[in-house]
Image (cartoon, rainbow, N blue to C red; front, side, top):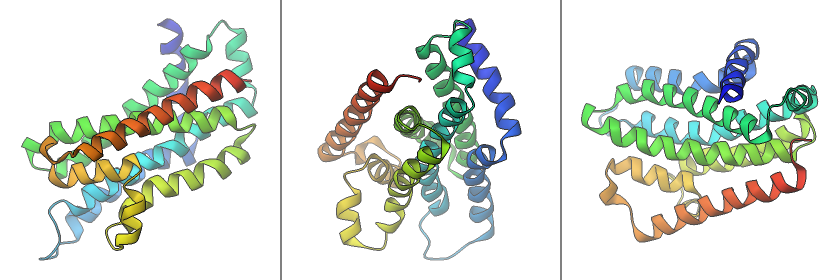
Length: 227
């Protein structure tokens, strides 16, 4: 537990110095507050921008995690940590807890645009989405040899997870493809703000996504480790 806390404290300091990663954490909460308060249209669905940017924030988390891990691999920080008796699982858990906590703070900020009775439900859905994206981002970060490779792999993944649900609002063919990804299913759940909206197909798709992401993580970690 001590090593995990050390990793978390280290990441807080590193994030304050890394503008690119810091912006990724705050951009969507800030955009949500601005857009929800600045744009009002009669035919706009309730909390439209909150729901839209929430899903995009979940997808963006993959690049944040990949960037953190790949940067420390490239700078040999990980090697120093491993030599300091920090176990790989402690490092990854520390990174995961840190990113999830920061993201949930952002989600808490975005939830201020919702009705109070919907906030607990919203935070549960966001928490699940962030966990999946953190594991997916860790897969990229562990697999990539350096930051350049991590970025080239994480960006397409982020684009799919973040922007497909948005494009699905305007195109039925895209929606048919997007429904196979967890971000689209979470978007559908957030639209209704109730667990009653979850279909059997949605549960299966979420479960399959979870199995695929977790399996990929263990396969990649077993093959590559924190080299």
